[in-house]
Image (cartoon, rainbow, N blue to C red; front, side):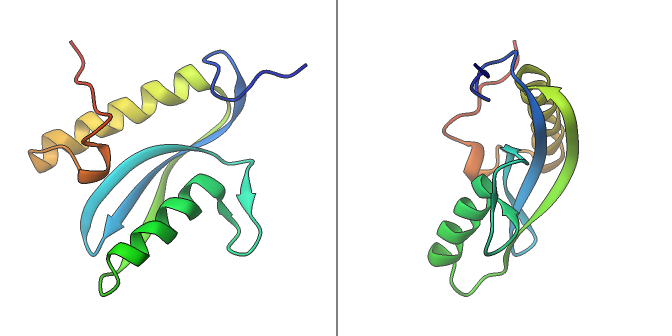
Length: 108
C-alpha cells in the first residue's frame, strides 16, 4: 500500500509555488504536481486556491508562478524547501504574505 503524500517520508513530485495578487506575493505553498485539474492543466491545490482568490479579488490579476520542481522528493524535503523560500520572501518583503499568515511558524 502506498503512503499518503502528507506523510513526511512519502516520495512524490512536488512543486513550490508563489501566488501573486497583482504584483504582490500572496502565498508561498507546496503542491502535489501529480494531481492536476484537467480543465486548466494546473496542479489541483493551486487551481483551487487561484479560483477562490479570483472570486475575492475580482478586479485584480491573480496568478501563480512555479518556483521549484522537486521530482522524486520526500514530503519532508519539499516542506523544508517551501519553508526556506518563505523565509527569503519574508526577509525581502518585511512581513508574512497574507496567504501564509495563519500557518506560518518562524524557525527557532
